[in-house]
Image (cartoon, rainbow, N blue to C red):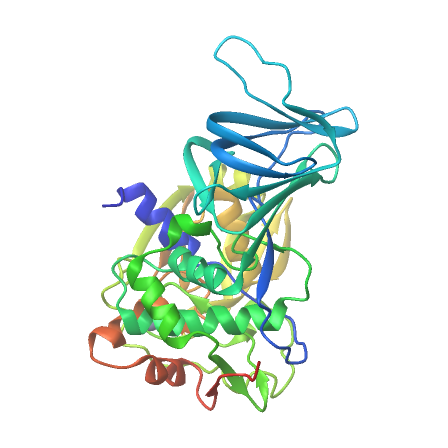
Length: 392
Ligand SMILES: [Zn+2]
């Protein structure tokens, strides 16, 4: 059972924007390179070390098996070294001066502790290669088969309570997204692409769902679609115009404002009210007097703010991102929000979670619970698209 905090964090993970740039249809790759822990921050001026849990097989710079226990890989001089730290001292490095280190599992996976929480090791299939990245950062690349990658992404992006048909819909989107974006270079493991937590997020129901639709992708006019999904639309999905700027006419004929009555089971399908003092708002967000100037179906498209006495305008999505960065992503979880101004207090009321474009994940689960299959779910949120299994 997930803790409330983890549950909430998982929901917010679902809410981020996923945009894939246009590109010609490619064959789905058989393997994928993923940069692990890609969103972590390393303080400037420090040299990064990563943990590793044995048993693990080293393939490069020499073949060496490491037994059970904790190991450390870090930059030392021009190369990398592996050592086995003890409680009070650091042992002589087992390997030093290596330009790169390649790891393979002894059992089925390689265990790497999360740099943000060493008590939570993640496990990865395939191989892991470590080299020096930019600055003093380690570059950790996982080479994994595509099926395992998709299975992990669906498990990472879905809640354990989601029904099989909703998981299948997510698997088709995950595959479509991969084909649209993958060009052989490592992709991030964060929601910048799609969340990938390795074999840690594999579950039996997710694996069965992925296996049953593996290779299927969503096409429009002969090409895989641009993939968008969010946690909870809150009643109506949004058009991609929500992201601001001009959307080329006819670019997204399959993304419309769709009435969704299926996400009522989401904990975000209710008005969330947050109040904040104007002084604190100014301190953290750098402006005052935010007002919605233009909105569409409850989602602001234009917001005015006042900075240093000057009123300026910004699009509603950028303002929403500012709120997330300034006050945390749970403060106003949805792009569907309103602002009320009272003397010295600003009140935000939001409903839903995420940007609202494309597939509503709680809605997909609601439809699955109502007996709809993944094909119906996908054509509901992406009208006019067709499901295809590309030739290999
Ligand atoms: Zn919905």
